Image 1 (cartoon, rainbow, N blue to C red):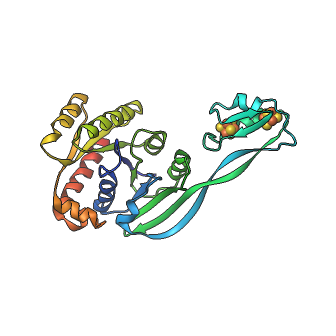
Image 2 (cartoon, helix red, strand yellow):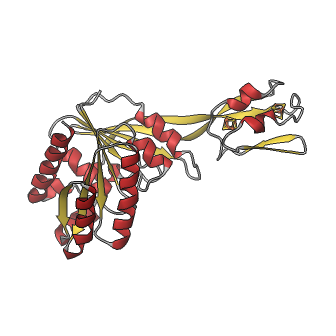
Image 3 (cartoon, protein in one colour):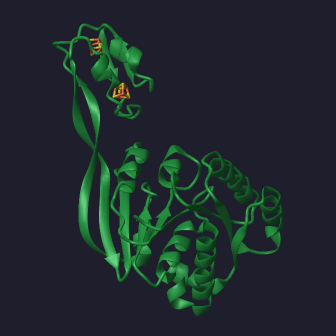
Amino acid sequence: MPKYTIAIASGKGGTGKTTFAVNLAYVTNSAVTLMDCDVEAPNAHLFLNPEWVNSEEVAVLNPLVDENKCNGCKECKNHCRFNAIAVLKGEPLISLELCHSCGACLLACPEQAITEFKRPIGTIKEGSLGQIKLLQGQLNIGEVRSSALIDQLRTKQVDTDLLLIDAPPGASCATIAAIKDVDFLVLVTEPTPLGLNDLKISIQMAKFLNIKIGVVINKSDVSSAPVREYCAKQQIPIISEFKFDPNLAKVYSYGQIIAAKLPEYYDQFSRTLKRVKEMIR
Ligand code: SF4
Ligand code: SF4
């Protein structure tokens, strides 16, 4: 059970949240688990290039109707609160995309015409680089059940004091699945009108979930003032600002760990992590 669970998220993709998560892991200097819950596009491994030690398939249960037993009564449809079942001409049709595997239709069917089958939705891989243990979810192409995969990933045993979670961008069910129950949420944003707009939505989500928040401004410059003002009004701390720096962009573009290549950033990431831990205590 980790002592600190810190999620890193952003209102939109491409703000640098994965870079931030990887670099926080790098400066930890002791055993740390990095969980890549951005399952539609897990990228942390590109920076870490870990040695993979395990890979397992993740599947969900979906209902399967035996048409020989079905009498078309529609009880399954009436009990599905996700509107995943339609009964057309006495034949139940199940949308696997909408099905949440709740099992209600099985219980509701008076003819015991419904059973379940396992449908693969993705994989969970485990790897490591030095003291960093990487747990990564990867959703299958065309699959929509990202929350189900993240739920599975979040049940993985973590035996380090610090767990860092790279959450999916946005404020979707998948993001919520990744950040629920964390001790602290770092929201990485850029100082643009779009960035601020998406940040506001992420802040609302975190407040709704009653999670402590801090903001990191990436590519900070003179246009950061509106983000600072908004955060001040909302009484949300800005825990770090990373100025636009071509050196940083270059290291990033080569898929390298910034804190490993640029010592001044090692210090900044270390201070940021220390500050977050202090805010959790
Ligand atoms: S398992 Fe639940 S969500 Fe899926 S079709 Fe049945 S009732 Fe609907
Ligand atoms: S509840 Fe059972 S019998 Fe009724 S329509 Fe659904 S599958 Fe068929």
